[in-house]
Length: 248
Length: 389
Image (tube, rainbow over all chains, first blue to last red; front, side):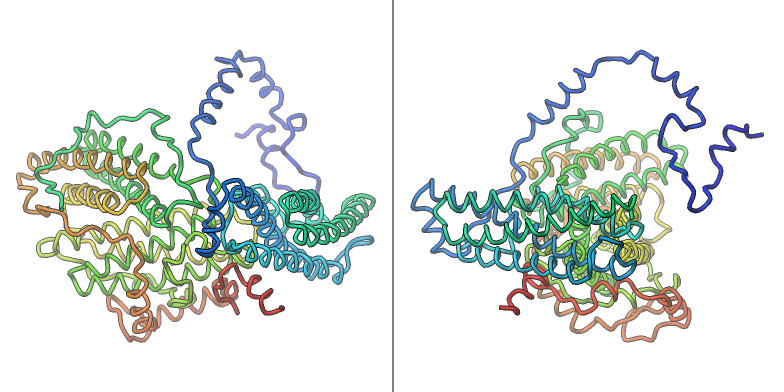
């Protein structure tokens, strides 16, 4: 015969009730569970850290390298100066990162538009036109970056090492936005992460281009940076409006 | 130069050991390594997974061999770990999925061309066009939901275009069963090819069943549910080629020979020196396991394993693009259907039509995900920006 504690613990959650079960203080087995905290462990946290450090040291090769230039001519130009070649690789790597981010960002806004279509907005939240405008600007940024890579004799279809790591870092955004259970407001909180990253990344990219002597490119990147600042301001406004509503 | 598996004894079983750090080696690079390195790693994980599955089944059915099965299975377990853990952590589930479908396409295509039995070769060509379509659907998903280009993994070795539409691959179970080969007359290569492709598809099925629910996007969840169902059909299809009258020890012997053959094929084609070393180590381990089982076979069945095994291995599985072959099969056989054990320009059975109509009755994820999509370098968005200029 199951005891009352177990029966309560397994009761089916009525729809719409406050029922989060993850906390310790509200769990029915907390008294017994608390006893675990007084069991003396074997070993030390230091041993865990040391073992882990060994794993980090054993890394070997980096995640990947830059692709070869698109043309033989490009390869010859890169071979002229080691420093110039290295600088070009760094610039192309970071442009590649931005390119991938803007391309995925376009798809994230496509998803936001679908969320808007299915559940609408909220007071102080975005209009469809605003979401579409940001989406189109992300797509334009992607297009501009692809042209920039081509001008620098790179391959805009390649995944650069920085692009790869940025994709891993932002993979959670795709999961949050794509989840049918997340409302528009929750998705906008997630997209805020992307917009915050975007602004700083564009600032860094413009400075890098400028430093490496690509003034025209740097100017284009600063234009994109301005647009991203506007995106960020808008998203911040929507997120604040949601907070004032107590979470829409 | 081939390998004389009856003469080469490899490493004795009791010397086949690992430490945890040996099991977890640096992974291959998703960006820098050749796509066929990924293909080999994925396939060999499947081969080892089949070894584990088979040896558990053997232990449950042949009490007298359970100790020997446990000894070998422990090594297979650790081999599988070492191989599978070569997959890099920056390779997402969907990216690995692209790798799985490329395995199915390129390895099945290679095997279909080397297969001496024309009926069995037809079965491989039939399945190949279905996995080929899966690559297209998953690539569309990757583009539209994540804004990524599947060709960064495929590396232009395999076409990304529609095959036999996934929507029509759904068949009643009885239409997935093929004619089995005869253990008496089938060539060793026929038997090994069947084991290889069955293992690959079983692992693909298991992978999709595990990872499908980790996706949030509803189209992704449904697409994995749909394609996982086809992969179960494929496992049924390929497993039905095997003769169930083979004794357990015959099957074990063939498994081990096939593992030698597969690692040896990997070794012959591998371009990454470090990973080549792993393939060599495991050729030697599998030879040791093969000779262990040859001894069991002789003692328990009183038969000479040389009657069952090839003296020298056949030509290795070819790890290179089979594009032209796949295109030619696509052109001539994309509309083929399977009814009962037969494949060709056939009508679907009433049972298949009814089953398919029902599963597709609320929509088709595979049709939806790729509606209006075709592969473009750098994704649909790359082309859209070119059009806008």
